[in-house]
Amino acid sequence: MSKNIYKNRRDKLDALLPENSVLLLPGADLQYRNADSAFPFRQESSFYYFSGFCEPSSLVAIVKSDKGLSSIAFVPPKDKIKEIWDGYRAGPIGAVEDYMFDKAFDNTQIDLMLPDILHGNEQVLYSIGKKKGFDQKVIEWTTAASSKDRHSKSINITDASSLIGNIRLIKDDHEIDLIKRACDISAEAHIEAMKQVKDGDNEQFIESLYIHEFSKRGARFPAYPPIVAGGENACVLHYVENNCELKKNDLLLVDAGCEFDMYAADITRTFPVGGKFSEEQLKIYKIVLKAMNAAIDTVKKGNSIMMPQEVSEKVITEGLVEIGILDGDPDQLHKDGAYKEFYMHKIGHWLGLDVHDAGDYMEGNEFMKFKPGMITTIEPGIYISSSSNVEDKWKGIGVRIEDDILVTKDGNENLTKKVPSDPNEIESLMS
Image 1 (tube, rainbow, N blue to C red):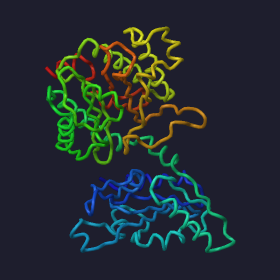
Image 2 (image 1 turned 60 degrees about the vertical axis):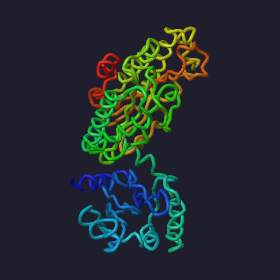
Image 3 (image 1 turned 45 degrees about the horizontal axis):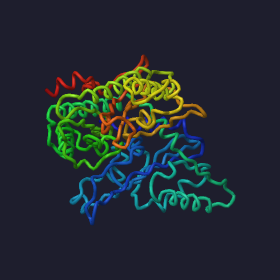
Image 4 (image 1 turned 30 degrees about the vertical axis):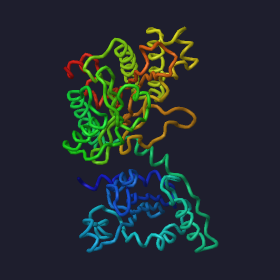
């Protein structure tokens, strides 16, 4: 893929960064699982967004001066011995020639050179609090830069989280194509799971099935630890033990999506282990499905991002009244938050390089409005644990349904509709 994409993203910062400033983008470091065995390396998302560079312990400085914008990369040095063991390194020359940075140096030179790069600038911007130890390093570099000339202006440290996040929030065509591929792969894995699950399977087996289906389609890793929750385990929102046996009469909630070329998908489906919903399961499921479809309809340019939340709450409240779990006037129950015992989470989040992607949810003092290029999840649910004060027939039912929705100029596009959510279609697929 052309590295021009990343250079173009850096070039666009010229219009967004203040004069006489430096934006610092730290890359990820290797993380060790135990002893000298490292986890597979995964680059920090914002660093990757502006660089396309996937070697650990790297740093990019974007300098905005009266001469324009320039990019300086610090990357692992060329090392023939380490390359024999760990693979190719671009080195500073490769960083300039292949990744189009204006200058590049060995990452061993960061502490020596950063104070000189910061000297004479008025602001240093970076995402505060995101990388362990980096805040202190910025303070040290800034202090060293200021001490070079007692008559120079002080250097202000500014949090760039919103600046970077809101750039990443609007996806370009290249990103949308990658997310669509991640969604397709993930949807196909959910379809295979629906076809294969059976009474007596272990949750871990189903998890391994998803990872296998992701991998064989070109997505080596899940975008997050899959949630594979049978029966009442589905009432634990972030259940990840995935070690229980599945029972024929239970529902299975699976929240799983792959990562393809760094981009995430996020899909949840709830389906009956035995292939047929019980009467009570189906009633709960239909309420959640109605809430999801109503919420998706509100994901449109210009609408508040909180509109899907409010709509889903009202639909779920009305549904719980209709089946007798809640008692009273639906409007008043909604105002009182009575639904929160059974639907206690927000309806979605941004999706992109991270499964819970960067980007603000507020503009000033108001919630953000949907804009074309945003991708949000829509994932209402109802969770009725055995401790709930309801009839026994409802206890242990947990249902969540989740799709990934792209905001377009004319409405929206459901990127994960390939995997069935209609209960009749699910039962047909599983028969």
